[in-house]
Figure 1 (cartoon, rainbow, N blue to C red):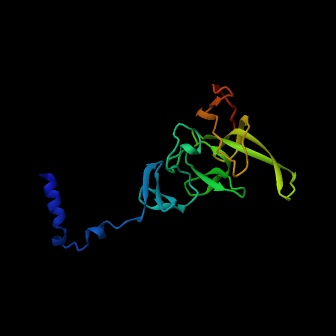
Figure 2: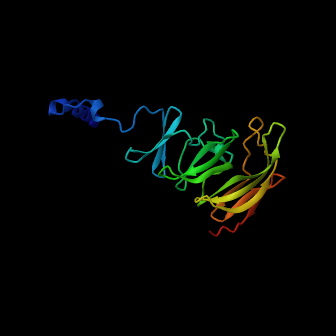
Figure 3: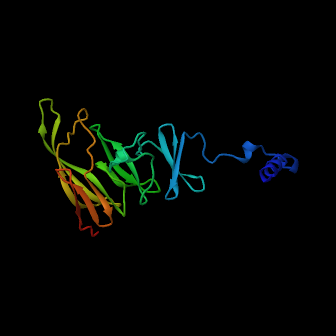
Length: 219
């Protein structure tokens, strides 16, 4: 009965001197969206075409649509790194971004809730932040020389490392091998470590066994 009365009141709106249509009283704050993600930390990702932005809890678009937010149509939720992210979201106040660099290989970093890059996209893979820390695979390279085609040849070293939300590299975890830095042969390297509390790491060793380590993360 209550539902019938509510519907009747709605039907009386035009007779009460309210001339707006249903469409007019539901004027969109943001429209033409292809997808709307759940709210997390006060923001919700919204998709238009191939770009994502963020709205706040008042429905205002606070981060403009952009094409560098990390998401996966079929996320690998059992993994630790970027491949586990389904929809863009903020965790610990930051959101993962990606950048395709000159060599055609993607690097990853983070933006804050204003859309500003706070951790540069320089990791081959990186976890989301937890308790203020993330784990990423950081590369360093040095020029070896040029080949017969006068193209630069580099030597690479890779380190799995703990990073904070200011982008500071705080603690080396382990060296990583067998990462091929050629666009044709490149495969996203999996993370072998994860912060499980504010001061504990779990690390997978060469025999696929886990160990627990307490790094010194004083900032």
